[in-house]
Length: 295
View 1: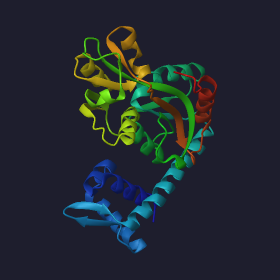
View 2 (view 1 turned 180 degrees about the vertical axis):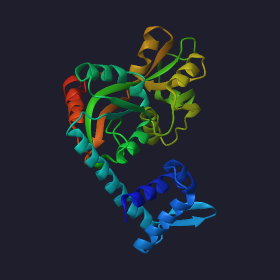
View 3 (view 1 turned 120 degrees about the horizontal axis):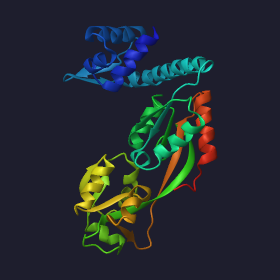
View 4 (view 1 turned 60 degrees about the vertical axis):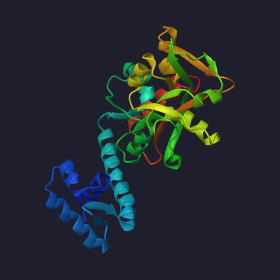
């Protein structure tokens, strides 16, 4: 049994398809199928069920995937450790969309002024996707909401942001509304898995009879802002993102009586992550330059 078998197996699990895994790995499909059969023969159990031309991982396969991903991650980290002896390694930094649209670039610019020798790769996704990327060791750090599987991560609170409601300047809605008024207005919100959606989900959890009138969902913050500017509905996003539009009277801020929503942002990394010199430098930079008072 080799690392190659584990790599093939892990890719098939994530792609849920022999064909897609073969494309990802740049291998012939029969070679991928043969590697899976070798694994099943070695462990004496079925790792996948094949029904209606679809591939389903078995309970045994799920258990093996935990070990396979752990072994692969440790091998990648060993490579980082050895590389770090002689060179400053790249930092793979993730950020959720709200951070990416507000202060991410300022943060990177500040770090690069201090450490121009350390390259940074950035990936902007929603918080749910970032959590998966950290688990699979595809990212080193991420600026994001608190992860659901918190037990796997170290989470450092670095800033808080108020969530804000906004509408077009001419939109027929008072600048101060009651919580019950959200029953009536059409809402423009981020997609499922985004931290910007959590305030609405909190309202729904506390008010079982509340059924929001969602007219648009999008992964794109700018698409939502453009829809809001055109008068399509009321937008919910972090205030740090909307502040320039409020200050220039492009959008109108809407307040809910006696109700505020805060969103916390964390620097998140895996508990088992080996921190190279580059990563240690970045973490120290965040410790020094950022705190939960930042907004």
